[in-house]
Length: 140
Length: 337
Image 1 (cartoon, rainbow over the protein chains, first blue to last red):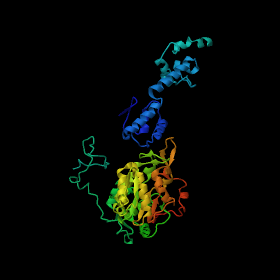
Image 2 (spheres, rainbow over the protein chains, first blue to last red):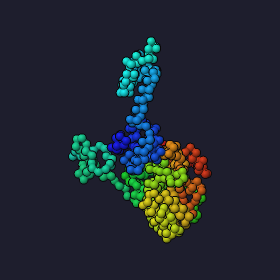
Image 3 (spheres, chains in turn purple, blue):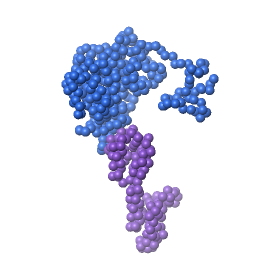
Image 4 (tube, rainbow over the protein chains, first blue to last red):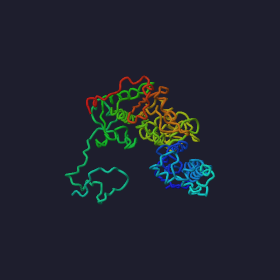
């Protein structure tokens, strides 16, 4: 296993597949990284030289991935909540955000939405606080 | 005794026999095997195809491909469907056809007189025998003292399975490993022929230069031992070999359609690379586009429709004149299967 930027990557995997193990890198981004560094399609991680690994680390360091990306997404959701948007409220209530039905289903949203708010919860970001916010008092 | 019997043939995958869960070995020891169930594969004694046996007396006869030739291209790297055929036969043997005799006659004619200005491309349907004919031609040329530059498959040049890198200058991309392997094949097929041709002038390769009295064999060996200069060595080899008339040259490329296709490689902006952006392909393109010719010898290619990703739609326009009649194999034409 190769340890790169805090992530354990399987040695025997093709580079473009192994890069998808990073949070924030999917198949397209992985392919673009390989093209930029001139790694052929069937190149495996174990075949890379030290210089190539350093180049790869350099490219990955320039990108926002892993914890930096998670922090950024969390901050975006919190910002939406703090300015009192509809999307922010839906995150706070743990309900679907994109207009889906809630009569049934919505299980994923109920499980996952608002996790970022709960992780960094303050009085203004909880569901209870939503009903006591200045915006909700005006609606009432 | 059937305790060592097996119902399948295990693929060769490294050392040691893999044991089944029951603890029974998967390999068969013929020395102790039950003769009622196992027999050694019969081996048919065939003549080896070389310059002496390649004549009209052996038309429609099976002939064994030279072992040295097979070693040079690497056993298990046979072009097209030949790997399956050789496994079925139990040995690397091909039928010596009348078409093969025509190609051999043409080869010997071009080794004595001036080479044609245009390359020859063998085209035909899948399974017609294009790769087989090219392999036989290369085998005969190798045994008759030609300088043989034979690529049994050019798919690895374009299918992004081998390393590549941008060249130091220009917009080309280099493939050092592939070029080194090609040079190794050239050396193993025609070492004696390469030793007969002196460089004629001092050749500079990187920081080193080869003296004029050195031979093409020294040039090829230098390219093999210095992968970063393999491309330069190959280009010098072709430049010198194509202009000399001492030893005839055969350039034989299978899957020649890949020279004009879009590869699976991408540049640094993630744009698909056409084949002519690869330095290895660019080296051979002039011989198949009529822009360069051999002083003595022949450039032959064979198309392949196995992987249509590398078959450009306008291939027939690239070939001038276009293919008039596809070569058909009369032996298989009568077989409805």
